[in-house]
Image (cartoon, rainbow, N blue to C red; front, side, top):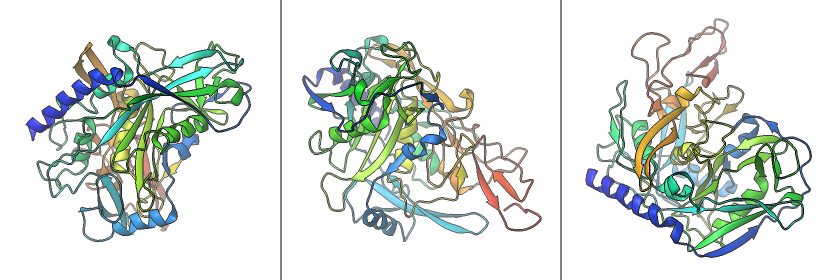
Length: 459
């Protein structure tokens, strides 16, 4: 298995080096939304603030598709998905909470008990965004992830040579979780099934394919497709932000029948350079993952994700949040753990988002930690790229054990449960139960309970 993992890392380096030379023809796409210029400053809510809950993870499946997936989750634990066309996936369930409630879920890959390697087909799509000024002609900003940036490499090359594809990094483990070597997200999901998985169980991203054409999204200032964060006329003295509805419209054109027509068995990974998105009067969204009806129709489900890549040589208003693969590691981990973002079936016991300001009921592993201090959220991975040494940013992730509360962490003392990866210390400090309605969890995230009794016993 180590030989296979090493080969994947080598192939990723090779494909990454060739990525910027693969596409020659440019396909220009405009948003079909209609709007007017955005007036006035946009409120800084921080990256992925709770106000953007609707964009954190999106389910656009029909009720029938949601119910079909939920139906497949019933039965024995850790059984592979059947009955619909999508990426490889398996189903299971867990029991937790003082009411011993049953919560089911689907995850990417195949059964951890069966072992073996299940590679996930994917396409990395570097989407160039041209921001056109008030005259409707002049390109004020050309944000292109396919052109040289840090170390003379493009964002696409750096992504595909980074920890999401490179399998040579050993993550140290701790607190009872063993060290593990491999791709960032493969080791994360393996940690989620520690004690369950077969030793040779792996779910890597396959070496990516790339488009045969180069996609360029045209965003018009007069259409409200983009704006300057502080409200000034372009060129911006603050920084440029794009309308999330406009770029999402372009995303769907890229992966849909008129674009790449991605099969439902493949994960489209859309990468943009530098730009972040606003919704209404608030900023900023740096990425999301989504489940849509597949291009094949019928019972097909397309799972995909978008994130922006902020080169280390660029101004980053959220630093260190958002640099290079930080957001992509967040979104891909969530795609592995919660691929279908279900509104039926995968609804876990309510927990408080990492911003400590709103509740969620799904397996969004990155949201638990994203608002924590840099030392808790940011994990560095030093690698040698074809351009030289580069230290990547990734985000620590909550593990399945955090949602199942098994093992439960004692409120104080040694032996606390391990709920996070790669930093196994991020989520291991339990909150004490001190009131009738209380928070049980770690960091700024936690589970809210009310046992319905006057004395507020902890369960």
